[in-house]
Length: 494
Image (cartoon, rainbow, N blue to C red; front, top):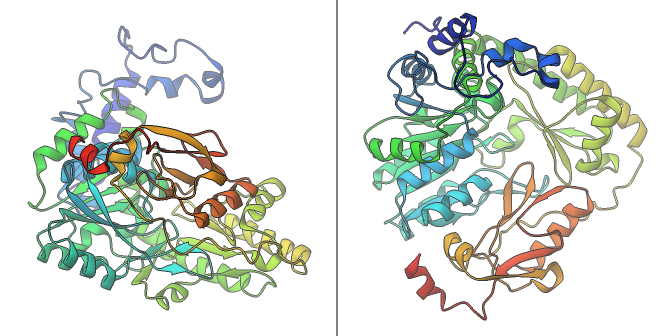
């Protein structure tokens, strides 16, 4: 295939340059309705924001330039099929799960999944069979999915439809993707992958294997996160004949907008070309620099930057070295405090904070100046804070998750009431509660609220973290057991 081509973007440029009379949507009429954004970004941006006009193809029934662009994309990312998404990888996860498992059918997955997966379970009615991930006690984070634990769940649930893998985790830790695929396929189950943070990995042998490279059936990947497209542009990758192609397409149509952003589609087209020709060399250049800054940070008092070996020693199969994890609690600071100090005093925006750490996401766009400014900030803070004592050092998030009582959909549709945090122990959750970022639920519908969960949530609130839930802060939405029939009865209805 000729990866120099950008079929969709090229056609969009041609359309934008014409003297069109825009008697269609959108209402800004190719930038002729001026606003504050026009004055900053220019009229040209709005000329490219068109709504699937003649010649630009239709995302839901691609027959022209979108079809060509998706074929090039699939080839670059080593898949048989690619489906462009303008609703983020959340949309891709919804499509993967809803097209794979119907109500009351099982999917095996690690518990440290993104909120979009829980949403998909509610919408599909599928039953999650959770595999406990390896808990990093030092960092207080969930890592890879252990192979032995997966094998046990497959043996206990041979009727499961699929196994879903996070590849890699938000923090870059990879499970044994190849063995997972082989074992799962031997048991006639599909392999789905949440690759929101791994779209770049296919372009370097030094990074973990992608789901498609390992032989998985379906994956959803965020091109905007690590491969240079505009935010909210993602893709589904697919291969083989184990999955129902027509059902997947129909489900994508169900959740995909009929008015997709031309800007996002074009950014997928050009990002694919740029990554195909540039990513391998840029990643090869970046990784030694990452190892160098880790070495330098680890010479600073109170800080520890983590290497690939740190995770391999815990049983991980691989680690994405473009994820830079820095433990900061030795400075007497929480990760949350470090996050704000880096932003406010050094104009450095890291991806997220946890109790003991901050996470930096590096990519093909990371420059030498970015890394140098990070090191200077770390050195300055080491000199300033290394003699302090962290008051919350004794607190670490628990290494287990709440017990599941019913499937998420049953609890979500049950009658509910609101209870205060301190009165909620023993209640059944009717909503998801998560810290954002990363958006991994600490509680999902159908799980039993315990004291450790309440303590963890209160700690995050004390650190100024963003809490995502349906309820007003201070309250959980729980199943109203007084007006709820036996769950088996309600389960049969849903």
